[in-house]
Image (cartoon, rainbow, N blue to C red; front, side, top):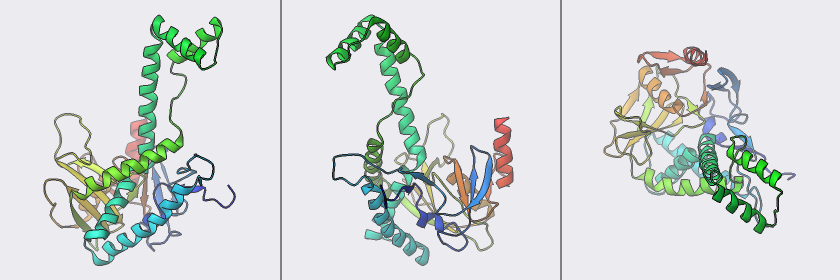
Length: 315
């Protein structure tokens, strides 16, 4: 693996650079980790990456880093599209808009949260199927017969131990990483056309307003109005707002039914968008050590208050 890229960013460096004061991959980026209840200074290069996250395994002759290298090439196109929006302060049309929607789609599905959700679903469903099969004598006999057909003859004692293990929760079930990487590509290809059907608007922060933040799950669907039942919003669900911060001064927002009004974000507006960006995230990324968000009582809070609220939840 010598010479191969091993540090794979699930949030691209070029994108994170837009949330530093100097718009560079080496610029200062402050990280607030909701799970660890702490914050620290970093850089886009040192943030939002995982070793071999996009690595695939397949037939001999296939580069295991081919997806990571393809994403790097795509990020060159996406960076140019994003730069066009930021410089012109307006949303593009035609090919540039299509590139932007593909970028947003990948940003929605390539993050750790989505892979964790898929892994958790696979684990729960697979365990339920295993435990259901082993709950009856007939199921156990069928399982033992299948093992024998595969060349795994077992003593009664060993098989009883295997059944007891299968009926427990002391193991995890998941698919190989190659499946996860392929599913990421499939989901992004499915999501991009759906996102392009939404009516997008650009929101820009006022000169006196604080900066917008990014996160490790920056594409956020939220309800436009509260729902009477606890149903999660989705990208194709009516009555939803999807928000995407583009850099520390601009964000894209959309609805299905109608275009949201153009808006110049003041301090309260930035706090509201930041809260959407933080909704599904574990880590928040900001150009400043202190950022703003909307608290439960609708007041504007800062990073210290957010950490304090998280610590109180833990206590």
